[in-house]
Length: 135
Image 1 (spheres, rainbow, N blue to C red):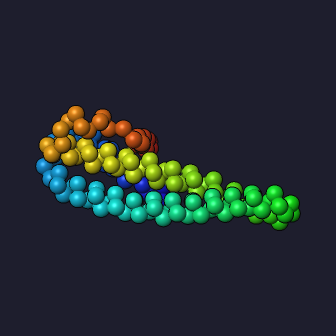
Image 2: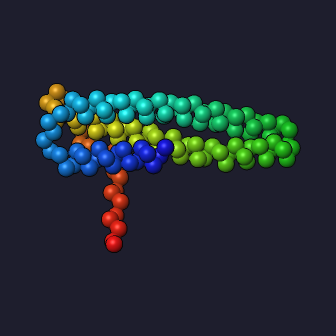
Image 3: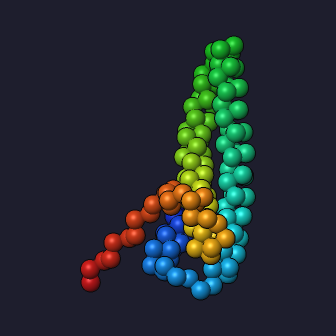
């Protein structure tokens, strides 16, 4: 998922940098809104899973204080091993969706429906285009 989101960000990043005057902004905004909705849903699901794993981890930490058993420690270690990648993945999703928001705001500004002073300079995640391979 992270790779797919990065590719989408790169696509819009290049598109907005190359095309200063866009004729069909409405169509592009609709497409971008659909993508944002998809990624918002994905982000919500991963947030719920991350919270679940964090709660289970905290319960095992408390259980470890009471039951000082090796099995509880092993379970705690296993959940921590899973929790770290979940947090990293959620971080990528969160930053990616925020970047898609900035693209939408930029398109709205270019469309003339939002004053320039209300749209901050485009920030968010910047994806470097892949290097061209030499043949």
